[in-house]
Amino acid sequence: MVNIAVMASGESIRFLPDIIDKFDEAYFVNGNLVPILLQNSEKLRTKKLYQIANRMLPSILKPEAYQALGVDDVFFTVPKSRASEIMPSIRLVESYGLCWYGSPDNLAWVFENYNNISFYGIVRACEYHISENIYIIGLDFWQGNYTFKKSTEKQKVMPKNRNLYEKFYTVIGKYPDVNFKMYTVASIEPRKNLEVFCVPKIQDVMV
Image 1 (tube, helix red, strand yellow):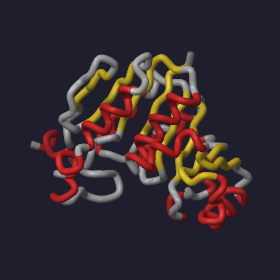
Image 2 (tube, rainbow, N blue to C red; image 1 turned 90 degrees about the horizontal axis):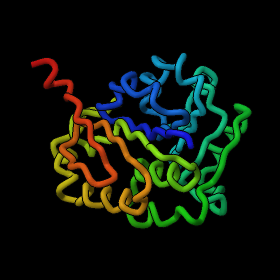
Image 3 (cartoon, rainbow, N blue to C red; image 1 turned 30 degrees about the horizontal axis):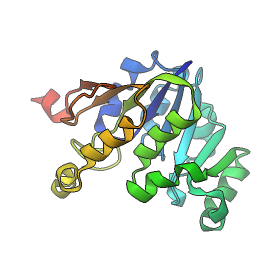
Image 4 (tube, rainbow, N blue to C red; image 1 turned 60 degrees about the vertical axis):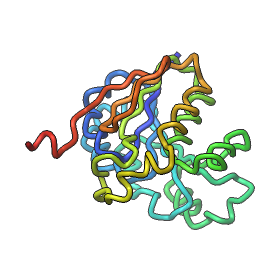
């Protein structure tokens, strides 16, 4: 079995060095957290690293970033049957000499029900890897700031308004044999298969 990490772009991604020796392979969502990944590229290059990209062209990285991180595979959240919708992104990925994959049919329910790329990464890790432990970092449910912009006050109340916490519990509840270890600034409660490590927000550190 391998240990997998799913890395999102929330404020808690700052604590990546604390867990980088704990996983063997990792997914990162989109490209907003690339600066932090590059800071840890020496160790990340010793692992198998995959990108999960959305339909937007800006989610595709510069070729030098893929090379520095040792990324060979890009997984799109759009099904291959709808590849024409993301052809500019596909052509760019192919021009870098990378492999790309459309979203398989058995993962369609993730976006149909949740429309959350981090949830998609978690489900993909569970479905396509034999893993006992999955580390989740950078998934902060809009609590704190994100690596590419500050969360608005409206976004900070989104978890309660949209029941994102409960949806997250539903997702991980589908995989009771997986141990989820989550590093986050969000006020989320542990579950039978979810261990939560609360890390401080930047504003709390500065006080």
